[in-house]
Length: 343
Ligand code: EPU
Image 1 (cartoon, rainbow, N blue to C red):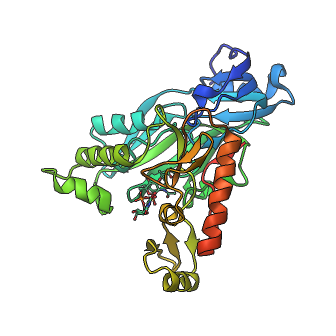
Image 2: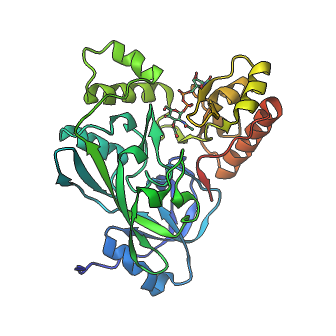
Image 3: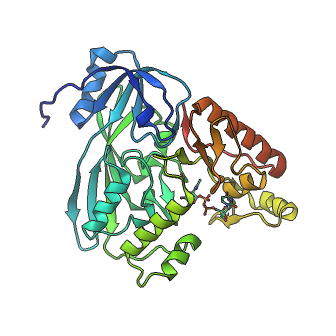
């Protein structure tokens, strides 16, 4: 059953500065805040935006805005967190796409439902989490994912996606590929198993936990927060989009050749025989840490993070990214791939 809703306000010449974590001051010709599934479904018949380019924005934590947007920015504000089912094995928990990711993780723990603690403090919204299958400290969101609801923007159709339909990969999903730009995710359901086991194998986390008296979910949550605060810049102070590049995955053969030349290379063997390399290490070795172009710079504590030191533009960040890619390719013969989406 659909409920009556107020058509969202139609804002003009709208600054996106507070809607992207780099803090770039670009403007959208129009903007609308979408607070309900009904409002999302009604967009396709809204005459005010007919034939207009559309940009769905969550927390703006995985986007590089390089120019003003000649279209309508759809800012997802759908709220709500609730347990929708519980059986002997797990809780099924649903959150609106506009909820803060970290707020949701904290809420699950406060209600005695562990399982997402390794993903504490990741910037952005619940609705954005599946798009790049957020991951950190030994856990990817896809492992706790049950299903999501979305609206197809062109038709207003409400669609459900299960885990297979989302095609999750490393910082990747259907929504970054064939589904790109076509859907607004409206809510996500997670399955949190009751048989909880800690994921505390990641070296940085293990180090902090050694000092703690017990290893429960709350302790891991606190450890992840401490490690992130020590290494990763706070975007409200220093604009950034987290890791700017994916950690590249190379063949075993390419890795052997690389290690012969660079014995110190930081690597993680994958189940399929390929090898993941630490892009932060590659960039660091090229001497980029702390260096930059104008206001765009490589963070001085984590070379994988590009920051806006103040007054940078998205174009400068992309220029810096290209220079880094060239150096890494020249020295290591490894191609880096950007993690955020550029617009
Ligand atoms: N390293 C350096 N120099 C640097 C940065 C890293 O030598 O400037 C080395 C480190 O010493 C370490 C290795 O590279 O041996 C890996 O570094 P780290 O543990 O900091 O993690 P990462 O591989 O750089 C990834 C994710 C992060 C996630 C952390 C923890 C990607 C692209 N990044 O970073 O995710 O928080 O692991 O799990 O997979 C994000 O995606 O936005 C993100 C922050």
